[in-house]
Picture 1: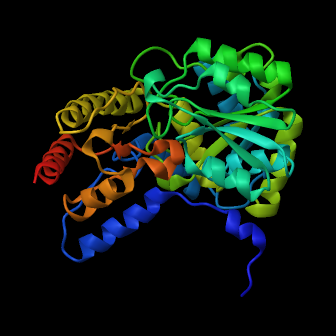
Picture 2: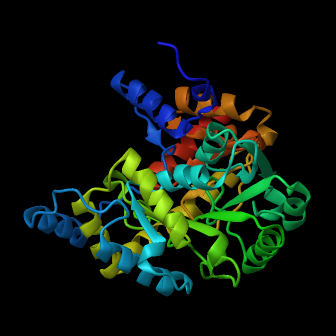
Length: 386
């Protein structure tokens, strides 16, 4: 069948391809340590599961409003005030199956063909994929190790043109674990306001922060009306398989994004949304315990990587990824990632899976046990020294 030309512009997420290869090796009898996939290895907290079961037994098995369960939208609005100091109304919230649809539909609703979108590189690969898919021009801004993988405001200014329609930011950041400071956000806001640019702020790791307080650019005066905020339940509540996310944006845009949902998925699963209410209103201790364990693992993996020949690694401030510099090994990142899998039995991602500026780096997820992390480091050491 002849495909539409636009399909040639559609990218993918390498983590799932590497996971598939790892599963193939496991079927052949190999033991693989999984440090490739960005998924908490914790179970969804019991009170959330119980809320879903109760919802199923109470009849939440039918279609719901395209924009989302009204009570969940109200709960998300309350959570925005609590977590970010951001005053929003329920009609500024759209609930979707996973957070990714907001990336796609937000770009679709705001950006015209030929307009430009500035996005972080290295960064979540779906940004560039969706920018290309809608016929816009992706404009990468490099996140450099020397700046702790934070966006440089002066460089941002140099990339803005009359065609710049959107800036995408992500903090805490995938794949580096970098975190934008309040000063960084203020500088980005200044650029956005001066040039009438929409900002898409992707914040699914808001709760997974090891030092300081999370700040959202949407809470800066003058920014709420030009910001699309993305969050979800996958990371903070270990709910990846539930597919539950949301966007917060001006009400007129929210209505259009809800209409896109009507056209694509009709609505988000009703009973999972009741579980989302329980997640946001329930006890915070499960998330706090998970973050404390991630912090412990972070320290183990950073120390281990820094002990490897030719490898150096910054200590990330958030999320559950490290982005070690492997330049001094003399091996390009794709080759080294393949060697880690095929020779060392450790599944990792090449830095270039997140864009061209990821060359010279690997991404490892430390959503695995300390025992497995330590074992992975030793197997990588044997590979590098053997």
